[in-house]
Image 1 (cartoon, helix red, strand yellow):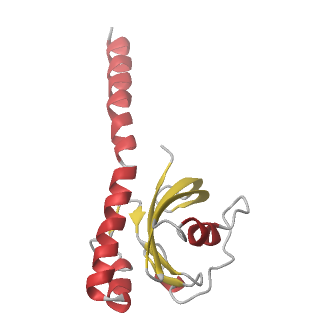
Image 2 (tube, one colour):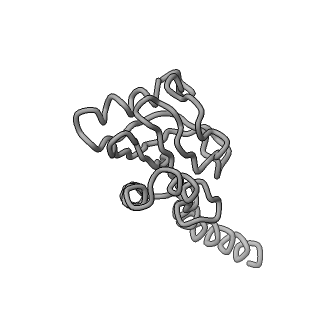
Length: 152
């Protein structure tokens, strides 16, 4: 009887933990909202101040696995919430884990329309695993602002 009760408690705990694990993943709506906030901030403050805010690991533009990244239309990193050291580097030829040129896709997909979703495979810094990612990007003038979610 005690063994059965312990088993039931373990199963119940596992079931209750599953939604908590799923809740750690960001939603597409959260990513889109973060991008909209980042675009507004970029417009209001300019690229230098915005880059500082986007790259602050304890700032309001970092939310769990969500972070803001910004490229210019030449493919240079303006800001990376995941790795601030990338700012200023040329990412025009950056490819994902499967060889997809992701920055070029972002530039191309936002050339004639301001918003796009780019699917690729990327390192999730929260799980330290390479996962499928869906980045929501918006072009505002010379800047492509994005944030992405991982498959759950």
